[in-house]
Length: 416
Ligand SMILES: *Cc1c(COP(=O)(O)O)cnc(C)c1O
Image (cartoon, rainbow, N blue to C red):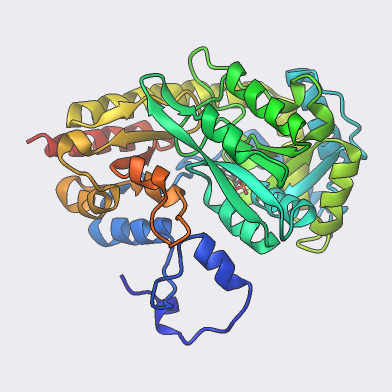
């Protein structure tokens, strides 16, 4: 599919090429392609299909939190916020980490408010990793990881999550091979997008041990910390023995409270590491959204809002999973996040890209191929993990129940 960017060449040299290559957006003939999300959203718009590809809520967060933002604007919180975030939010983050996880943080030196989790991830990688350093992530991985690692000029090494009867689990042998003397950062994501895996105690302990052995920093993307289901429990790596002093944790009010457009995130950890990240972050955005920061400070004091969201998401997960199974997919039931991975192989689709491009016609629904969250090998071909997960598709269930019911009804057409 052609895009405005593809027509604009020839393109200038620059670091952006590394970013494009790392993100799979640089074609073999030098063309620039759009992301899978843009392609699938265009497809949904063009065909009238239900877009379960892009993972943002179709219902905004609580009205009382919205009122807090309006109040904050009226109270005059409209000029630059402090570079490390407004004090009430830094205090609310420290309180939250103590109340929920027993972690003790100084709000003045160990908390940094960021422009979403995305900026926290980018600033952390730019601050702490560079040429010659390796950054280890799980695979599949969130798309900004590869881009930010490329911006930092570091090398991306991956550890696959492997499909098992117990869900997508960490490959321990691959972890041992991946983490070594060149590892600067282990960048983790649990609860995990796109698989819905919540890493268990043994997996977390193995990662922590590898990081300690090779003196690596652990960066944990915990944006789905409150969106866990059934008896799954989110355990921050910083709570494991000896890990608080080498772990930076990243959260997002966008995910926790369904305000993705507010772009309020934060990072917590030891003062020296937070200082290093703050030094870079202040020259990225400096700061943003003071009124939203004040509103999130109020929201964070309340544990009921995220709990209510998790409860309603669990029901919507069950609805979509049942529909996918009825349609003939093999479904891995997620323990967290708002995504489910379904395997199109039983329906005769070996390639998730092919399935996703045809799904609007076949069933009026859009998803995204899981292999879009995977890397390439040295030759630019799909990685081993991309090939192993080739037939899988990610669908979101952070949509209203009636939208999901409609989608489930449409998906039934695949069986006919
Ligand atoms: C959505 C998401 C982010 C980005 O969070 P923002 O606060 O919107 O920047 C980071 N990591 C993962 C895994 C996500 O799903």
